[in-house]
Image (cartoon, rainbow, N blue to C red):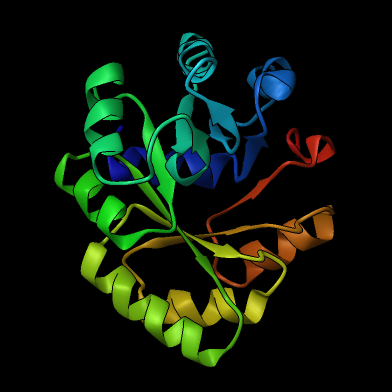
Length: 191
């Protein structure tokens, strides 16, 4: 999936279903969300989860930092690229993994945690270097941080994630310049 396609899909359906394993899979597949984040999984179940999402004609992203059973280093990108033939994106907080995935032409969500203005500046510098498809600002309930980051990297789409639990918080993220919101709150997946 090209960056342009991902942008258009998220503009039309800005709520991303974020699942914690197989238990939420069926509900996420049957939701309006065209993109599904796999937050917690292990090497025994992630193939089933990704294959199920692809069969439902939705786009999966594996959070490689939280994939139990595989080391969180750049070789995991090669493994996922080969295993799913480039049909699966990755989520990571690690610059070296994000850079490797971008070089492999995988879709990349680079997660960043905002704790103060220094962390925002450092993250912006790293994002400009890596150039991921999406940047996920955590926690997503900080519209001010989303606005600031979007202003500094206007060519990369920003999503909010973490602690987003109400429709109002979804709207706040979108109004701050975010293109989408990821949430484990099932009630919001069909918003």
